[in-house]
Length: 260
Image 1 (cartoon, one colour):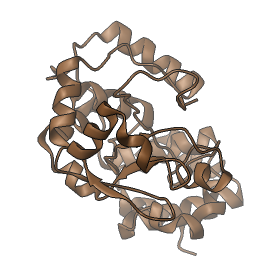
Image 2 (cartoon, one colour):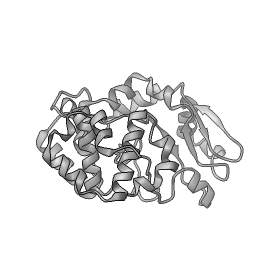
Image 3 (cartoon, rainbow, N blue to C red):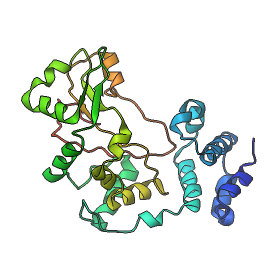
Image 4 (cartoon, rainbow, N blue to C red):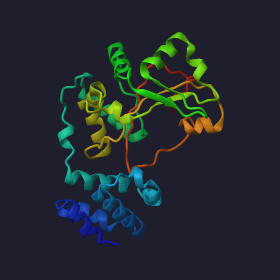
């Protein structure tokens, strides 16, 4: 096992300049020190946490709120977060520092927050235009694939029912990279409002790891279908600390599979 202090110094030479940081390291339990060592090694290696979630699963369980905060400070000392926390103008949302501080406080307290912003009809239209040529596929017994334009057309005229039910009732984007290359989704992912909230919550510069879109039609209450399509209660545990942004493209009520 590499020496944790030497490892952190090689990763971020300025981190231990702070007496508070040094004391926080000294206060760690043996299990926490071992876990932090392996996670920092993983960070240095450049291997994504998602690819190592099996090997690091028990290590991730060591990260309580205090160790989360300590790791955030380690990352932030190497890549300062303030550069993306400035109240820069957003191309999509009106900035309001008072409201954003309130959102951030609730996010830290509860672990979730409903944004005061909503997608406009123009934004929704742009999303639908940009996914028109993206391929979507379900996860049923007999795979069904169609592009976004076809999927939306089937939804609008009611013929989507022919493709859902026992054969899987959620269509997922087939290649997330296709989506990530679209101009609107890049603009959304790196919007100053979103980056600022994410950086302030994480305590460091956020790393964008996923751009995804799916259409759920809650019809088939079979356990394997619900589990395959992430419709059962579950916990995502691929990172020490992470934040997800969900944007509904249509109205969702209690009968439509809401996120809770």
